[in-house]
Length: 229
Image 1 (cartoon, rainbow, N blue to C red):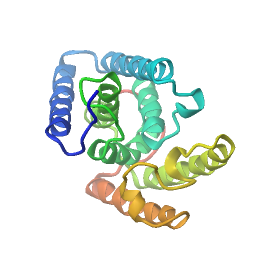
Image 2: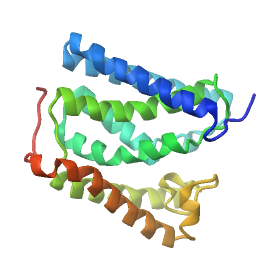
Image 3: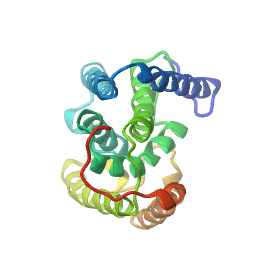
């Protein structure tokens, strides 16, 4: 089986095809009940992710502790699935800011095998779904990012990182890359050793998440309880 190559024709084809596919889903959603369309898409992605984890455990012999959904994109995926099922504006705030992780993951994917491969397909589909869900909630549920959500997302992810750090220490894992730099080639590798790279990543997060919030600043709505619109 061929190895996946970063920034290859295959990489760009996967990106473009997913953009077209999820744009098409946004279009056809106009002809369906928005609430049920969101739920069906969320359930479908949940099944896909569960199938991927099962495949990796059975055929790649990956241990359960290696498959815990504790990287940022997996955490965000769980939250967007719940958001699409429940219509929670609170979760939208977290998913909006954390979706930056999906963009970086798509640009520099941690995949081993060339397409067609089920794990590669699932990786791109689930990461693009995070972006799709945020755009879907913005368009159809009229959710908007807020400054309070900006602070909440930062606080919650740091709280999660703290808990994951101790779990990593116990399991010998490196979820969220809070215990050491990634083993694969990543921009984080250029930010120094532990714990200095964490400080750099935090600063980059603060700046980039504010930049994606800034266009909505003048139109920010009060952050609170939500319903479907």
